[in-house]
Image 1 (spheres, rainbow, N blue to C red):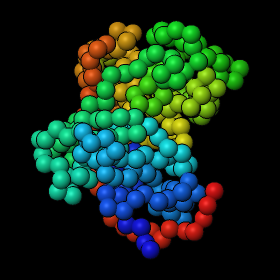
Image 2 (cartoon, rainbow, N blue to C red):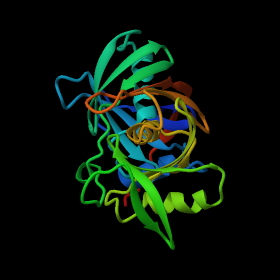
Image 3 (tube, rainbow, N blue to C red):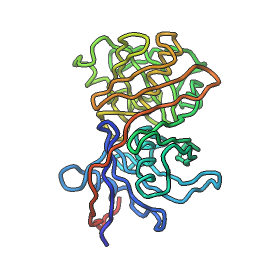
Image 4 (tube, rainbow, N blue to C red):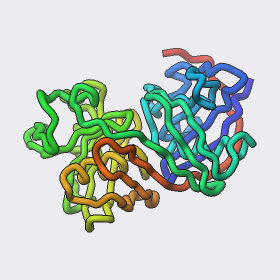
Length: 282
């Protein structure tokens, strides 16, 4: 039976969205990888499933899978796409605040316009054991070995682990080497999204992200949140920051410890389609 889907993106971070409100999600890891193949499947950075909530205080649950079939805990651009998808499905009115359930817990979303969504991403987590990251105590800078080199990073969780590196040049050749190595670094036992951030001023950042399980992406919502949070912790940025990624710009607002961080940005529909699920297993 063909699998019906929506193809969406948040500033170039692209998704396949499945309606699993009435029929359970049933793809295995090999089928997810086949669907993610940009030559023989549909192609995506992450797969999103919209499902009934596990938590009765939430309106819906959304599952997240990377292109390699591995599960993900959170996805900021994906949360915005889910909100826009629910609006088009007629269950999320403009202006309403709705609590959605992600794999990492509840997330509040507000639809400002049909394709503009604000997401409460919660409070950034800097405690190493909760990221998780191999360090004895929390600090705003860590030094990690990457091959024969040593990098200074910030480590934070936004529902998924992030390593943040400040750089002067986002096009430097070494980033292509550092990104995959940081994503699979042994100090991050669950892997990490590796973000390389260029600070332009206290309210403007540029960012590239190598995502665990997906590789280099045009945009990473949690990566933008992580970069802002790490630099805010160092007092290098203010409370309101524009983060410019290859696919577009996100607005990140956070006033510091004890407060929730909000991300605002677009969500767009690309097309609808159907795909014949292959009978394959891992």
